[in-house]
Length: 168
Image (cartoon, rainbow, N blue to C red; front, side, top):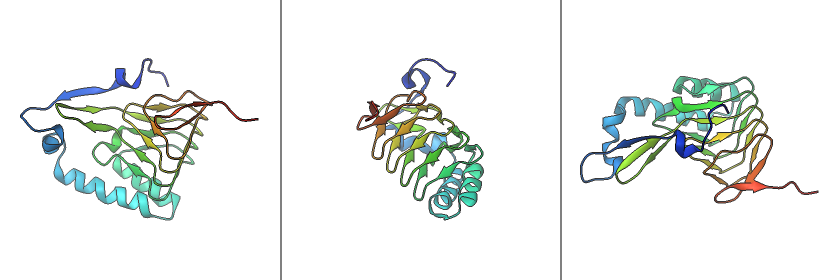
């Protein structure tokens, strides 16, 4: 978690030419063949029952995968820029969670690296936006939308995700 600032400070912004929104020009940014390749390995990472196979598929996509990473069933890495994801040692990404490294907007698209720290946990159906860093030992509650960095050893929940104090 060495980079300071917010996720917005870390995002790369790229203007999109023409009258249409930025999704119309995705083929100018990525080879369609590469996206098809990525999609096939994303499917394997989502559906394989074996964590070894899932981690192998994620590595083929360019995801940095630490030892002991647990990638949940149906969890989805970014299909366009999976190489911008870092999953550190012992982290868990839960069932049907989504990690995005891009945002296609009307007049631009944005890219940002996503880091899930050591032994951090991302709950089922959580969505992590581009540029977010989740600290070591942090917990993201199920169904949360993570729009900002999550400090180490904290729990966030909600839409948007906010820090929650532990219950006694």
